[in-house]
Length: 151
Image (cartoon, rainbow, N blue to C red; front, side, top):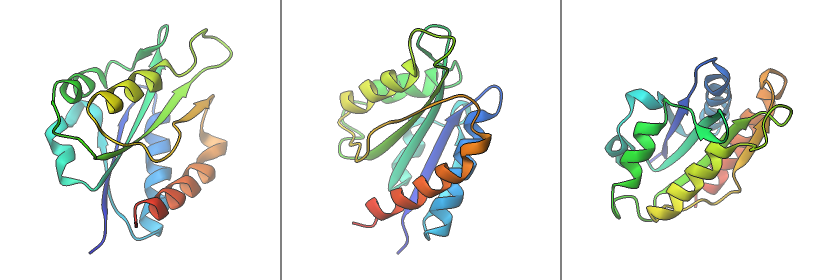
């Protein structure tokens, strides 16, 4: 039986979607079944049908979640112990040059993962800038993640 992953992203300009697609390519190459889902079209309960989840979110304003991730984050936070033990990894997108709080959205999602009793097996990936020249690295990270998910 192959593993099934959800890669959920919140984006306005498309950067998080690019990262999600590159990550999914790496997972697919590693024989993991993947669904890339927009956060604003995803309910927390949808995540229960996946073995593993990756949340990708950009930071807006001064350390806030992308507004398209807020509802899903709130649903997760109010889910009780529904996600206890569920593996959830996080990728935060930010801007080191123009903001004092780098990848604040990732910090918020990390707090949520801890609050709901989910598990992160890797450190949160925090990325600054435009992801175009780093897409191969995100694909490789997807391949590395698949190794963690086979145990």
